[in-house]
Image (cartoon, rainbow, N blue to C red):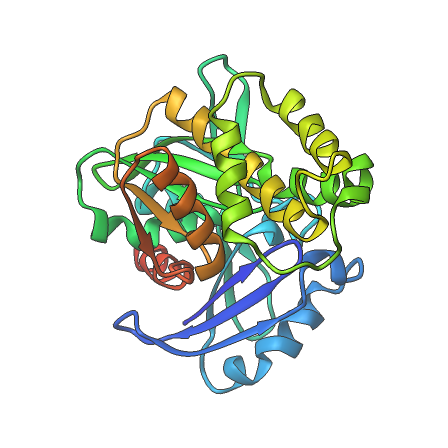
Length: 294
């Protein structure tokens, strides 16, 4: 089969054997925003058409490809949900030579009743559940919209989303803080740790953000350290909020090596144990969901 994680800005395809092993993989800057209206069939054939021609005619697509801006909108599957519920909620997409189904994404509500949604992360979560076991656990999936997920007995019980990555991009490029931040500077672990430590102090995020600007004016933080400090500050506030809502440690991190390292540092700063998993757990998750599809 072919499993595809098709997001807003990225495209990852996995050629998966019957035993779940990844035989081949491809990645391209072919996110849904880069595909013209009506162009998804041609984009898919251009990316994996040779795999389909070679006999891989079972395809499972996940991610923003199932959003309103994607190929076909797949209604969200409500939590709690595991691989069986997600598989049952997949929808078919017509194709001349392949059987294509689309993973729906998940929905939940926070304690105040405000909706939560995810698309794509659910396949990563399903991909690590067997390594976690049936006991209650908390997963963290960093990114533009970071997810903190509660799981138990092989099912996703609920989750909360934090605007951390997108907030960093906006604040560091389009606010007064941009004048204090060196563009494309190297990561500074010590400055990042200072940002996490600041997040643990009173005052709140909005006050702490302006504090970065003032500290730069007084020469108390260098331009080439400011981005790392801001990253630590935002991730620190994210971790603090997640801990306040309640977690079941150790926190299971699913992220790229660089992002996992930053979140590990932040969790260490709060004294919370953690464990990292492979960032392409989506491949295994897609294979497990596919097994449940009739």
